[in-house]
Length: 120
Image 1 (cartoon, rainbow, N blue to C red):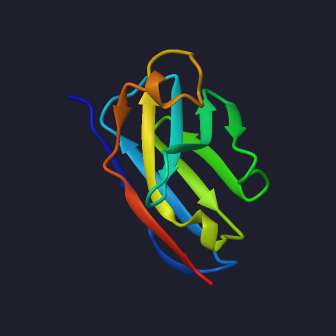
Image 2: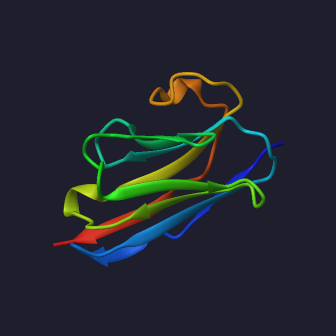
C-alpha cells in the first residue's frame, strides 16, 4: 500500500510564504502533482513535476515552485506571495505513468490533504 503524507500547511498572512512537503512510501513515480480544493469548488490543478519538467496553473505561475528529492521520495511546493484566494486544502498526488499531469483522474495515489489559509 502506497502512502503519501503531506505536511507544512498552516495560517499565513497575505504576501507570506509556506512550503508544503509530501513524502511517498515508494520510489519511482513519474509524476507528482499538487491540487487544491476550496470550499464549494472543484479540486483544481496547481503544479506538477514529471521527472525534471515542471508545470503550473496560470494562477500560481511565478509565485509557486514545485521540486522533488528522489533520494527522499519527497516532493515540495514552495508558495510565495500568497493571496487569500490561495486558501484551500492542498493535496499531493503521484502517478506511475507519463500522462496528463493536470487531470486528477490520471493519478494513482493521493495524500490526505493539508489546509492552507491565507488571511487578508
